[in-house]
Length: 228
Length: 117
Image (cartoon, rainbow over all chains, first blue to last red):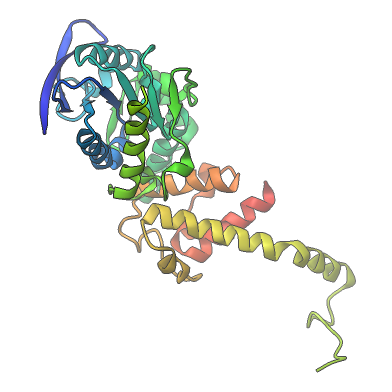
């Protein structure tokens, strides 16, 4: 059964913030922490991520999908968050929920805490993600009869932070993401592209879910965990 | 009709231009076809449509401003995916209404970029 839990997330400034997590928790042995895709891709993949969790639940695996400070129902301002503060938050979530394994979705790979084994789905850097978001902004500006250039927006983002596709990204977060290529990982295995049928749902213009893809991803994880 | 000489139907074309056109004709069609196929496949993925539906797109099929799901974020995703799969770089200045308005416009743009690259 799914439910919501609270967990204390450390903040960039100081102190902690109580954040939500969607959990399938029956205190079972195998416990997967899921680091969701970021920003616009988070919306596109949310349903699909929960579909995967539901399947894992049926396979006897607990899973946790935390909200990072500044996202979803969080009371914290998004623009105050940094990539490092989110990394600290994911490490805290792993500890709080006694995670034994990790699944990262897209740019969630940038937040993977050290030491946990697991999987990455379509790992992606911050650089390419920002490129799409900056482009969305220049296209929208042009539609509205304003001229904005990617280069100028990048400068603004690094200096003052910037709002992209409705997300207010602070200067530290912007700079860190701009410099972040797809990370490498020694403890996480990439789910092979050919193992998941069809195109990635983050490409879709609108959020969607795909049962076959969810089956494939959950099966890879469930089979992997059953061999341990 | 056997024995009919094969011509390009442009008898008065200067020799240089004809040679140039022939040279292009040798390699352009397959490459153009490949870009067309890839572009349709990207649109399938972005719009979540069946390949059969996207196969019906012609040069005049409206895109941006005609398909409600193609908002600025979706167009940005589309262009980024085109960069990745077609190995091209799309600059700010390349993006204009004409290029995004119809399938034909987008295809012509992708072809021009692919040749440039």
